[in-house]
Length: 322
Image (cartoon, rainbow, N blue to C red; front, side, top):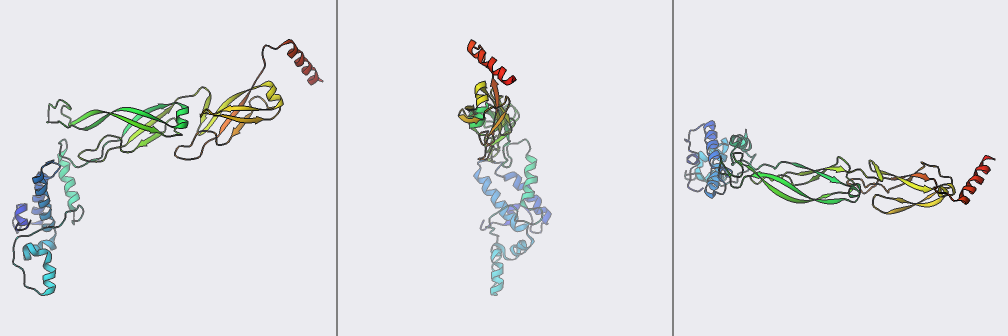
């Protein structure tokens, strides 16, 4: 910016008030903002120049030094301390880096918020985070136990890439277009019916370079014919022959993961007796712990008895009666 005048850049007189300077800046910032002129390097350079000028003239102390020392205003304190001769008055240099939030009062952030808020419905907008999306995923109990993956076919809404205003063949008048998205997602072990799993950054794309939203998987776990789930615990009914229930035995208990678990039942185990197998239930979502497996004994009475078997039961009946 050497050789350029901050007042000329903003198009205001040297006696302009702070209000007039701000109004001029707002007008120019709206005109040359990079979001309004995407890919235009000259507008980007002009916007930077405007910011530098406004940074100097909107600060009362900087403006005083600039009015007195011109382009050397940033070295004014050094000249004063050294007792040196006042430099030749000339045009300001600016040269500092613009950052939001450095200014007093409303600041650049507030100004840009109000400026860009006027661009509703137009392509030139500030970067904005994409919307979160939800997708329903149906899994079996075994998939919920082990974890699984799904390939989703979703529709992503994004800024129309070929929008030319009204009558655009892709989006009509909305400025937004949809495209298909094929996405593989992971369903972690331990999900339950109604679980909501977050897949970060896989939602709708952001606008104008903003971050993408998140994708949320809404889990539905199908009922299982053999196992009943209560929280992280699993309940299963195990058929046991009458003789094993009476005399005691080692039986096999099925688990959701497919593994057969050994369980010793004592003699005279009653029908409906419940046994707990600790840590053999569902994994807890986001944890290394597991629920428990509860095996309920279902004593199976013998059928199609032979003559000899009937005689033994008659004998047992007589003994028990005595």
